[in-house]
Image (cartoon, rainbow, N blue to C red):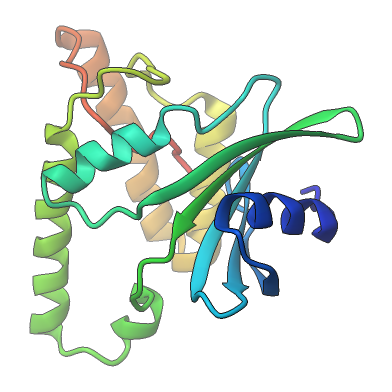
Length: 198
């Protein structure tokens, strides 16, 4: 995945936050975006997401995230969105307030089974709240099962991480979705994560 030059990131962050960047740490290159944790001079931390799309990206994200916060989902506040042409490519930036917390990867080995079960239940409650949000603008997608290439990639990632039995769960889930899409009327519009590799 391409990496945005530091001076471009610094310039956009300074224009949105009014502070200099002290430190920049890459968090992930997953999905469609570059993601960084940025330490600001005397002003805490923000998260910077950068998308490379042919059209401006993140344009409705702040509004939808505010809708999610309104139903009790801990979603970050979007401080600003910007679009920059660099080297013949459109870069879209979303700068968000950092939500404090710890990764479930870190916690899973430390917590007793009852606490992990509670986290799963809490996660289900948050997911239900996310699905209660009916976005009134932004990118909309029809529910479709994953294409064979995406499914194979997702199953391969799960198999490498969790083993063959976990990969079969991904494949069974995709088959279940295929049957549901074919047999049921179109579902109502809700806010959902559409990245099958997540």
